[in-house]
Length: 118
Image 1: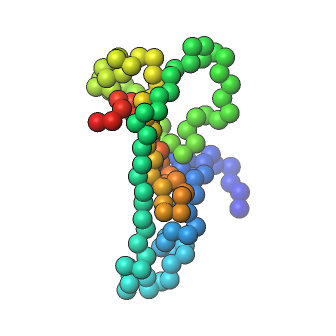
Image 2: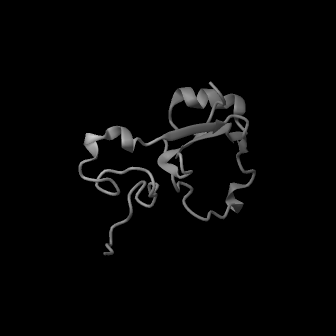
């Protein structure tokens, strides 16, 4: 049914319906043969992508809060701020993600890289 509660972080993201999930799409005795129910995750990144800050952010019209499949991040770490000083006009210098072998993104597993490839 419907509730009045606000959805929490990741509540709207769905796991792949084809990947094995205990109590969802696996038999009760799956632990007798765990090798049959392995979930494969693919990690990939683009270290050349750059995303610049907007020149006039007051003209931005957001279609959502910008989080979608992402967790909120903390931007008050000194090390990150010092690294970004060299790239002050860039909002991100790459992106990384995790997906299942069927191509569905894993909730909370898409991130911006702020200092390129390390």
